Structures are given as structure tokens and as C-alpha cells.
Image (tube, rainbow over all chains, first blue to last red; front, top):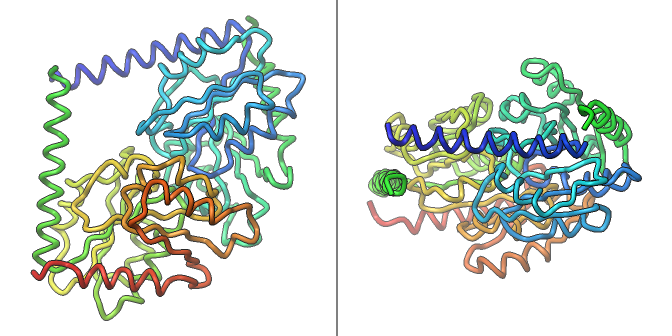
Length: 219
Length: 219
């Protein structure tokens, strides 16, 4: 019984910290976006293109990785603030790490906070951080069976990006299979085809972000 | 203090079960191979090609996924035995699941047991199952920075497969960067370029497996 109590109190503490993170973002009028995907789906490249395209709106980025600060360095040039969170062996970001990031980040004049989670289709989907919306990336080379195989991630998503769509001609990837699998588990989230190489689909993604930002409660 | 004791006893129990799994494989002369990678790196397709190519040697496969039995179904035709282990929300296979799989699998006349872990570059690397060797797959579309970003997986690997090498002409992927990063953390494991689409590199991988099988202790 003792074990169960410990786990419950850890989970409850996590939810409380996530709620506080969300309240800080709400008060500052900052849209918090939690980006989740397998390693190498293109989260960092997407942010490299998204952040300048949202200007003059200002963006901050928290980047979760086991090691290295490569991803944060790639984004730092265009972001108003970039925080690298190294998790060591940790397989997802947790709300306490996001809280520490918020402590480091002036929220005034920011419009967006992108949280690039650890590359992992499983564990990040089970942890709320205080974000307003969750975005799942699926890249074409990963295969068209991933929605069915990792449903937790795609169920929780508020938007789904099918990235590297420019590679579809070189691969056996059935977009209809992805849409059919999504219809089984998540009909509320829009699904955008995207190529961070060619720019295809970027404008629809930016419009979605702007709409979500406009729908924030007045601070 | 109570929490720490619980965790230690869970870890020790896991190691004991893994040791027993390994002893069962040793006694039967079966090489246990734990395959780990991100989702969609090509583990299942690799096994679809590896298993028939190793004939007349007989292979069994345990496949870990959160949900669906698609991967096991894809392999079942060529394998002597195929066991799908659905983990629900579990982010890696554990030795108890492998033990249950072994209980279901006649080991007589088998030469290889391939354990296809849950698609995840983080958590599987922290858990031994009783395997003889660990194999890490990295696919070209994931990018050439993954060895540095997920070092635990690649440190533990006894062989590293760079898969989907046929896509290298369509992508910015520097093979030398992968090799340089591997030189920093793992110089004992061979690294094979591979394409499950064209068959390039398959023979070197099969040779490595045959050598590892020949090096098993006499049962």
C-alpha cells in the first residue's frame, strides 16, 4: 500500500505544478505548445521555420533532450529565449522542469512558448506540463502504422502534423491509412500534411497556432 | 527510505528474471538478440528479411508494442514462433514479459530468438531482458545527430545498424558524423550500413549474427 501512496502523491504534485505553469502562461497571454514525436521526426526543424514566420509575435522555446544542447542552439537565433533541459536518462519532460524553465524566462511580450519534448512516442504522452495544446508529429519515413501502434500520443493531440511529406514518393506510405486510424481515436484534432524541406503546409500550421493564440483567455 | 528499498527490490527482481531467461537460452543454444530503435526505424522489416535468410536455422520472435499485433503478424509467416507482447502504456519490454514469452515458446531446434523491443530510443536501453546481445537501429531519416542525443542506447549496443541507407541521397545525413559520435562512446560494436529496401548490407549483418551464434557456450 505504501507504494501506491507514493505514486499518487508524486502524480498529484506533478498535476499541481502543471496547473501553476498553465496559470503563469495564462496570466502572461502566452500560448504553451507541447510538441511530441519520435526522435528525428523534425520537431526542431519545424520550430526553426515556425518561430521566424510568427514574427513579430515573439516565441520562447524549451527543448528536452537526454544530452547535448544542439537543438536549443539550432533554435536560439530566432527565439526570444531558448532553454535546454537535459534529462539525463529521463524519457520525457516533467512539469517541474518546465517550472524551472519558466523561472528563467521573462514572459512579458512573449506570445508563444514551444516545449519540444524528448523524442519518444510513449512516455511524454502520459505527462501534462501545463501546456495549452499538444501537437503530435509523425514523419512519413516512420511508416503509416504509427497512429494505431502509439494511440495514446495521437489521442491526446490537439493537432497532428504529418511531416516529411516530400518523401512520400520514395516510400510506401498510405496517407488514407493514417486518416482512417485517426478517425478511430481522435476526430477533433486537425491533421496537416507538412514538409519542412519544401515549406508545403506550413501556412496552415501557422494559421492554427494563431487561432489558438487568439482563443486564449484575456489575461 | 521506503521508496528506495522498493525500487531496489524491483530492479533486483528484474535482474534475477533476466538471468534466468539468459540461462534458459544458453541451455537451449539459442542466441537472444534485443533489437532497439525509435519507432519506424525498420525493425520489423529487418526481421522479415533476416529470418528467412538465416534458414535452415530456425528463429522465434517476441514483438513488443503498446497495442496491435500487426508486427507479429508480419513476421509470423517465416518465424518458427511469434509472440506479440502488448505493453499497454508500457514504454519498454521487461524481463518478466520475456519470461512469459519463453514459457509459450518451444526452444528445441531454435537457433535465434529476436526480441523486437517497443519503438523508443530511451527506456528500453535501461532494461536488460536476458539477451546475449543488443542491437541498435538508426534510420537515415531520423538524422545524423541521434548517437550524441541518445547515447545510452548506442553505448549499450553490440552492433549498430544504419538502416534506410538508400534514402541518403534525398536527405542531409552525414555518415561520418555518426561514426565520429560513435567513436566517442562505443568503439567495440561494429556499425553496418543497411537498406531493407535494396538488400544492401544484409549479408554483413547475417554474418555477424552467425558469428555470435557460433560463439555461444556449448549447451
